[in-house]
Length: 308
Image (cartoon, rainbow, N blue to C red; front, side, top):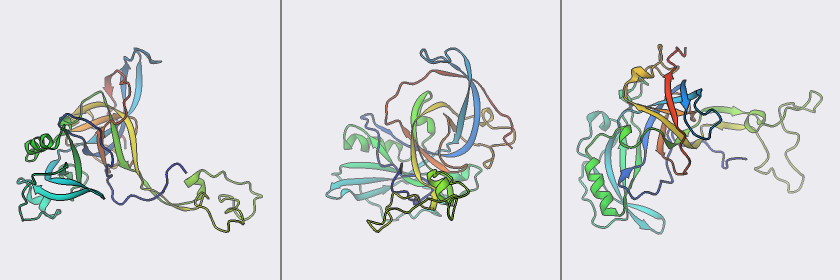
């Protein structure tokens, strides 16, 4: 009962509902593809840690981050039902490969004089990676600024430019990860809810529940564990430490490539710990929305042994 409703995601990459509040004009999201995991040997220089000035082994996740390109600017106006789209201005540098998969209107729209919010629509370039995918992901990124006109002036500067990972994030900072977990199919109550396995003398079944509930009220409550589909949920992990941002794949590529992924060809980001989802799945990175003290970790070596 940790998360309700327990429903599957509508698409393979997440959507962001809450954005960090900031007055500096900048973008607040980037999309990458999960490559896999390895481990590093690092020196912990944090003053109050148990392993102060010692070398420790840290599991890390590598995310390949090819550049993303702006697609359009969307202008919104406040209404009784929330933000309402009033106009959309497309970029002039949309490649032919993107137009094969994305419907772009030929009618040119004029930017409105009065609007309340502004979002930047971007698309990814998965064909630059080795995952074998051609159709790009399209999603909105919030633009932060003091007022609407400051957002518009900043958006015009980046509408025709390519956006890279180090334009948004910096090393040794916390970021939030939004992803879709692995789909596990139809599962029983033991795996899905952690119901204890009954003894062999139990009536009817061992890996089932003892009762569906009381006689009255004569219905099955939603709190009763039952079998069903499991996994493929949208989840957010807060405060993942960004250990490294690099553009040289030779520093992190294993000898035989990452398992179920292959070799990294573009910019990448290294995060401490694990993240949700299988290899090749798209994850969205955003600046951390919860403040926390940043540890001081110095990377000494990265394990490049074969993962096969």
